[in-house]
Image (cartoon, rainbow, N blue to C red; front, side):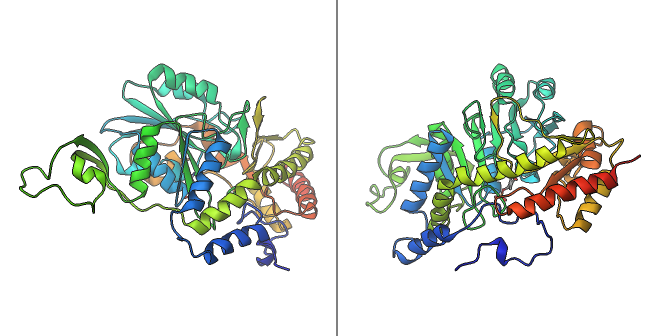
Length: 415
Ligand SMILES: *Cc1c(COP(=O)(O)O)cnc(C)c1O
């Protein structure tokens, strides 16, 4: 019998936070093994194509392009925005830094819109208030796997002609009125990092879009071709007496000249073995997310007994994927840091996510400051907690976790 991934890890905590967010089993191993022994290419082949087709169908978009990580997905999505010096982007402070990190390399202004404290998602009213004539895009996250208020966000985007990039790294398996993140905005970015809802051998990502021209540009860039503005040409190389090239070079080398390079190409191809695991994992997504929901439901029921605690609120029409299980304490009555310490002593590993991005040194250096997003700041410094919530948890661990949280809340509550 093969051991599952977490069973093999040293048990430092009775209830560990997830390091492998999706349950791996024999079917994942078999799929990878099959590719390895098939004699077919190990890079950018048919398996990747099938994974992308299946993924696009799941999300409900025309195009899904796999890449080597969620970070690369976001980098390429941001490239498609064609931002120019002085342009502005509106984003959330409550996300992982990869959501906006590529913007550090550009001469653009990033404006942080505070979150809705009930959901931890970007507040569309704050977004609307930050729009200027230079605003080009909105970059948001579906925090923890709870879809953002996309109806309201897209209304603002339509009104001002903005492009919306969804960081859907947490949100695979969630939905909003029957539609999937990754298909709600203009570009969706997914991560298949080891900790995410499904994985492709530990690293991987996907970009989704309905736009054919963007898909074509992405396909080029991830396959080591420059993203160029091309103009048609006839005959050989301009100014040369050489005859038109032989048949060795790609069509556009004969037929086009380059007016401008938008971006150099790179190699961001997902390997066939990784795609094979992705296919199997995508097939098991409903079961994996159902387990996350079951764990979250048990924890929500436990916390319902405390008026000092509020779980992330799930609006009607929303199916939460529970990549994270997040709750807030009433900081006048509960000492959140003490809660973290007591839970650690009880054998429960917790995480705080996320440090408000606008307070990171690199973003403070670009002008943001404490007080810019008071709700996200309060959440980080005093209120938020994330509990372990992943498919590898056993029923026994979930019960232990629920009881430990109750005991810890009693200890961390002020008289
Ligand atoms: C994991 C994650 C990413 C980055 O994905 P990688 O595959 O680890 O590069 C980006 N955004 C969010 C919100 C994430 O959780």
